Each structure stands twice: as C-alpha cells, then as structure tokens.
Image 1: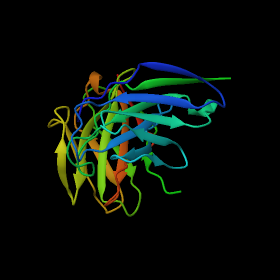
Image 2 (image 1 turned 135 degrees about the vertical axis):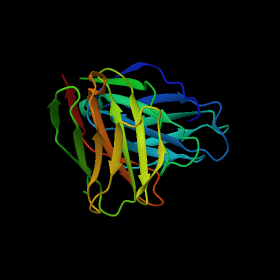
Image 3 (image 1 turned 90 degrees about the vertical axis):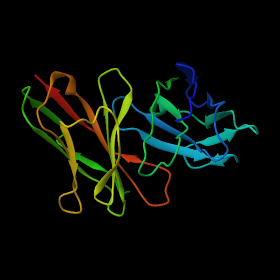
Image 4 (image 1 turned 45 degrees about the vertical axis):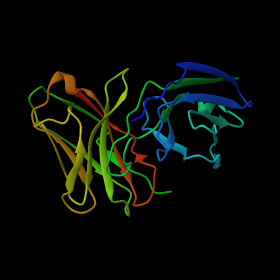
Length: 112
Length: 113
C-alpha cells in the first residue's frame, strides 16, 4: 500500500465536526483512498472511499486535495460513539482479493 | 443489515492444539479474508480467498495455517498446532464483486496457554 501518515491522536468535542487528516504523497493516479475505523477491539468498519472527487455518505465526508497528496475525513457532528481509531489506507493493487495494510491510525477521542 | 458472523467469540486452547475459527460471510460476497490483531498492535492481513483458492497471503500465513470454504457458506481458518504467539483477535471479512469495501466480523479471540 502507498504510505500514509496520520496524527497519532486527536480530540474533538461532542457535537462538533471532527476533521481527520491523512497524507499520502506517493499515491498513484488510479489508487483510491479508503477510510476505516475500529471501535475498541471490534472489527474494523468501512467508512468511505474516494479517488479524486469529494465523497459523502451517511457516515462521513471525504475531501481529497486536487493534487491527491492528502485527504481529510470529516465527521460532521461527532458523538461519543465515534471514539475510535481511524485508518487511512491507500491500497496498492486490487482491493477485492488483495489486502489492506492497516497502520497505526489516528485515535480520536470525542469528549462531552 | 447483513453482517459477517464469527464463532467462537473466545477460545482458550493449550499450546500445540489445533484450532478452527469459523466465519459466515455476507451471502452474496465472493471474496473472503482473515486478519488478526495481537493485543495492542496493528490489524494484520493473513490471507484472502476467492473462487475456492487463496489469492494472496502474508508471511504470517505459514504452513500452520489453512483456510477452507467447506460448504459454500462457512469460511474457516485452521491453525494446526497453536503457539503462544498465535494469541490474538482474529477477524474474518468479506467483500462483494465491484465493491471497494470489506465487511468485518466482530472477531474471535484466541488465547493460547
């Protein structure tokens, strides 16, 4: 997978937007950016993915810079249940039938 | 909402014993995976499986490990002779054709004594 860099931890106040950054400066033109999260020892949970356009779903928004070297995951109204480790992953090669490489991620703490 | 289910949720075994971890992937998915997470460490890829054969495996997935889809619904991970360092949470995942996302189960915690 292309190398990604994320801050090890972040805090966010409940109800506020959580903006989680990720650098992926070695990303290639056809590689997607994926975000997963892991809530305390549960299985990782898919959040969103994108190629170059911004994406939004019911969980989050993904903003990818024009040069694609970085992205930001936005949780618009963070709740206590969003406390988790968030992983930014850029798979090299196919996703289905291939592998995801999980790094250390960003530990997000949402505080009341 | 469909989900990946895993059994058992927790298994304790003696070193050297064989262990089988079971997974029921989402029914129309074609790609199946095992990952593991040693306590306090990263989630690590073990193996991916498609069309009844391994499509990719990691260095961790040595001859002690095997996977099988015995009946078209279950997907199993067998550890032939467990070692202390096999103690971990094992996650099964599945994915569908054309989908970019993987769906993970809640995990099976294996403790080797």
